[in-house]
Amino acid sequence: MSQTALTQPLLGLRKAEAIYDRVVQLSDFIFRKENLEQKAEHLKELAFLLHGVKGADTILTIFNHQTYQPELEVGHEEFWGELPMGTTDEKMKNVLSILHNDYAAFPYESVNWLTSIFPKIPFESRVNMKIHHCGMRFVRTDGKQIRLFSQGVPVQVDEARNFKYTLNYIQNIQYLIKNTVSHYWIRLSYGPENEYVQTFHSGTKESVKRDLLSPREKEILSLIAEDLETSEIAKRLFISVNTVGNHRSKMIEKLGARDTTALVQLAKMTGMI
Image 1 (cartoon, one colour):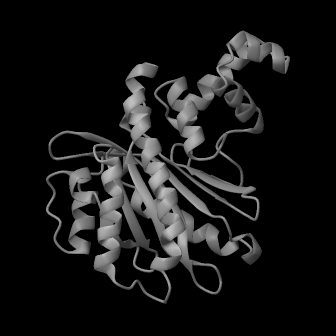
Image 2 (cartoon, rainbow, N blue to C red):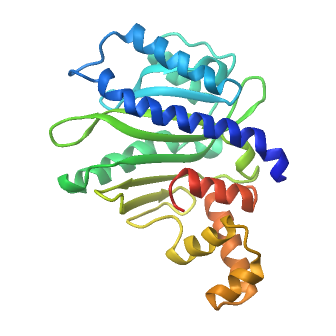
């Protein structure tokens, strides 16, 4: 996909990120007490913010980690298309019914992964947390393809800093993911300086205490993001042109990116570069 073709989706994504950041700032006012208060007012506020990203395939949601279901949600009807919503349980079942068969394991794999690693994280490190899910494929009843990207941050925790609620924005990044990709990945970053990372990749079933990209790969990708030519990168890092190309190909495969432009965008969205 060309840079020109990517322009509009990326502009929509950046708007969504700006609005997401603003909602995070406001979250202290939303979660003053144990439970959500004045839900109708907060729903209206989120709906108002969502107008800034209309047409960008975006959902803003507050997720309850005690029930593993959304507490508040805006934009979901337009995002998921002609799906009967019903109760929260029925809505979740209907959404999962359009999950592509390649990703049937995603719901329980992702929950099991998070619940298995979180208790092992020291109390002092449970700060500045961000959770990214990327690549899950859904097919709407009208045939529209959805590749899900979700970023979440906790907006209320208990005394042990376990998640109670996270604020998420969910986006369709079909334009960034290669059509033939059949894996997804999760990235959790945390710590006083956001220095710790744990990841899960469904293609390899690896759960590791390191990032999806190696330090060398990040170094190369950062230079690619600066628009350096392959030959310039090779010269600067004292490696061959073929080595640069091999690293690029491996990164594209690992993240499921459509091309190099999409690779850079995915890495930026998750804070890898």
